[in-house]
Image 1: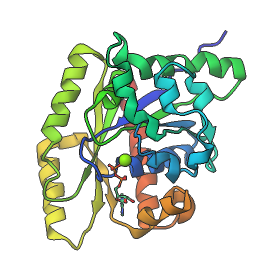
Image 2 (image 1 turned 45 degrees about the vertical axis):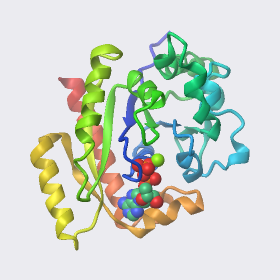
Image 3 (image 1 turned 120 degrees about the vertical axis):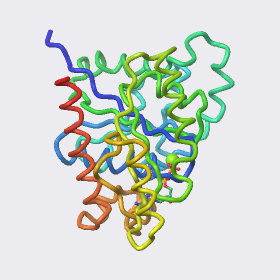
Length: 272
Ligand SMILES: Nc1ncnc2c1ncn2[C@@H]1O[C@H](COP(=O)(O)OP(=O)(O)O)[C@@H](O)[C@H]1O
Ligand SMILES: [Mg+2]
């Protein structure tokens, strides 16, 4: 039997809300699929915005990441196709709000997602679905057990930072959580990169923030900066990634560029 290569598992994490985690999960996922990768987005936020933004409405969420984390369904059973070829999603529901209490007493509570992802490869072989090359996990705006599950099961963290005055605030807390998880739960965890989002070139402060973040975090910051673009914020209300809604807009082009950069970094990491 030929070995199915493991997908690269990237987690979108930042305990601040509204910084672009979900937007990046949807649109980086779409852009990776557009350049030929096979992508699974896992929605780990009870708000379910990634699910809505990829066109899976609430009624269609029969099996969700809640069922998966509780061990009542497999991840393969939760996966649904999207309008984007080669892009699937495991949707979430508000039930996820209760999962923390339900599994808090279990020894394996931090490894529920990791196990679910590991069980995916045999299911892919059985059902002859093309194996995923990338898994993107969209986290809630908190460093709770859901985010810990994502970090414990991941290869790398992608940190969206909004280009605003308080961008760096909270970053050190996130980095120390990642460090902690690396020491205790997942030694292979790395920071893949920091993606600056919602950049507005007319705002001098935003330019200053970009410079500060680059000075502080060096080449961990992706070269691609995602501009503030109204098309990006309109697309979810149509249940579409911005790349389907308006491929030519600056937001779509930036996410395509980011996908290329992510793949490039992956190649370097693998070669190292
Ligand atoms: N590049 C962008 N341009 C314009 N609006 C954006 C952009 N990125 C995100 N937004 C909007 O900002 C809000 C917060 O983004 P979101 O991805 O939901 O953040 P998070 O998941 O971190 O809470 C959403 O309304 C989203 O549509
Ligand atoms: Mg979100």
